[in-house]
Length: 284
Image (cartoon, rainbow, N blue to C red; front, side):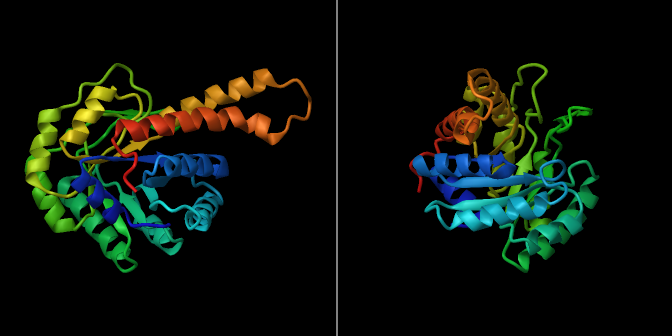
């Protein structure tokens, strides 16, 4: 069933767990993630990432597919727009039935980030859509692996004011994670996370969850993180499955189940592991 991000994260906050959020394209990913989440009785957050995930007709296919199948699953399903930087994309997502959006003004000065985020909240609130924003900046590789940006840690002193002035439902914070594949093993600033948590009770989000050591992830959940974004780990798993499928074929016209089976299996294994890692199993 389609659900609101705010409701899902507030429940996670009260229960001391976090919900994995998976960027996805195509029905293979949507189906595998939803069926795995349902089998473990975990809420599902499916995200469409601005850029290659939604290019062309991707906006319509991703939103239409998730909305069509969500009712067939008896777990909360959040349809979330990831990393929008323009208000027209926020409006487009709301019009297409996304139940949650992220407006990313993290590279802007504080005052401009506030203005952009507040405007996004005003657009989304008219349809009851949750808004996630980012304060500080999570760097790393872009999706095309062409540009690397440095991270800027979130300032706890700015958190309370930012949340009060914007009215966001969730706040992505920067404590040492990065997007894409890590160049070296990260060390998350857990003390900074505790200071952020003390500054506001808004649900907290970590981007760049792929490749982060499990013990550091679990400690961040214990200190207040309620949503973890994951994409690269799923792409790695799917690539492994593709190689296995290609190596196993003995006929020129393999059945789709034989082509896609290993891909789904490897993807499901990662999704299941993330659910267990975040203490999200058996929460529905």
